[in-house]
Amino acid sequence: MLLSVGELTPRKNHRLVLEAMALMKRTDVYYVVCGQGELCRQLRTEAGRYGLADRLRLVGFREHLDDFYCNCDIFVFPSVQEGLPVALMEAMAAGMPCVVSDIRGNRELLGDAGGCDDDMCGAVDVRFAHDDAASLCGILLRMMEDADLRRRCAAYNRNASARYDIHAVRREMRRIYGLSIEREFQDEDVKRAYQKSENHRVFDGR
Image (tube, rainbow, N blue to C red; front, side):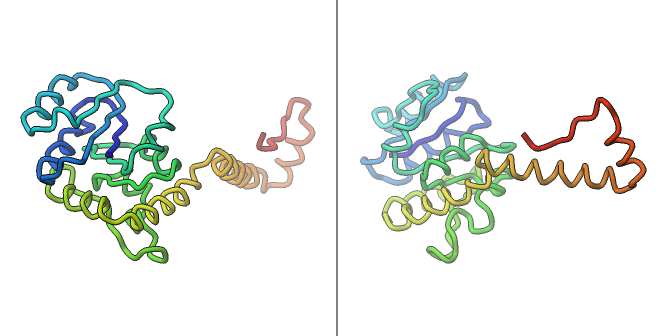
């Protein structure tokens, strides 16, 4: 079972997954999309045109996704454009194997390994061009047919997402702001004047 999370808009590009499914010639692949938006009716129409009407599940906006992460096999993120994709980050943190479009944001999250650490399972690129359904189809088929690959990619994703954990982010902010304050007060006279100020507040990172 494939899972995507995101608005039903052209930028999220869910139609590409339907095109890839049509190329598979398999009847055991289902596609669940959590999200709402302007393309709901169009996606249902396209699914019907590809003979996938009974295998597309548009479940609307969902605030809690744990059950979907647990019950789906592969997270697919086919966006045309992203900043820092929170939906992908959350899927990685949940330990899902992820197949993503080769765009900025997705590349930064997955790193050079492309979704699987070399030490764990060799160089495995899970990225595809956002307009290449055949490439997506090939990557999905490989992932679906190799349970060990899914497990290894899931482990890589969980580890890779740890640097965005709230505690890791707080540590980095403390480090950055600590360095800024240190540079600000390299001049001892300025530092002494600051320390004597009745209204000063020393940043302690909390």
